[in-house]
Image (tube, rainbow, N blue to C red; front, side, top):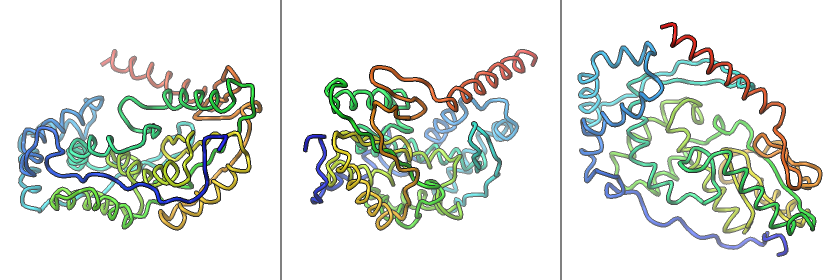
Length: 323
């Protein structure tokens, strides 16, 4: 197809490999994953940028005892996840955050450290959220490259399909997520901890858990795989729940969207939201930047967010200096 996409349904490839203890860096057994040394490493990773917070300082006062107790609970399958503290932020969009206890967040980091490298190797190149070496800047650069290629350096027509997923984190089906993870995690003890973390929240995934960032990518990798290997969308990228596909054929994009929306609803129990198709010549908003041929401008909301963060950073510097 001209736009680098075929919407004919074909049997996509499967996932290769499976998580085993051997996939975990510096660990040869489950006992080593939950060792005091790895718990201490998880604590050191977790505490970055959080020093001075009351709950963190309280946990740190008896750090050794707390980590040994965690080790004992994990080893003896007596670990139980606690509840969440709920609060709201505006960045500038209003979001409800659920924060687990420090003890539970150390376990989240431990699990994240054990699983990240295995799953990251299996994600598609153009999954850009919550991954080392990726991010919004890389995603925008890739979009710019896609638009240049499809438009033949802005001499031909170029259409952009955009959509996101309605209330994505809250809409994740926990049973389906656990089934996906079970296909990859061969070790029952590792899987049991993962299941405890996922089951600690009433439905979906909580905004605030480090593991939620990994699990949302695992869940939506099913979408990525479908789009790349079944739809065969060559110029496809995803950042969190924002999906972008570039093509020179508007009709193909409309057909692809209907197939993708049906897949999301029937297989992942997710609903698409804010679907649009526009040309690069009209200006396309991708991850906070409105792209035109050969240049882009920051969206107003992005500029507001940057100012808020800058002001917040100055406030923290002033407060820390006073202390």
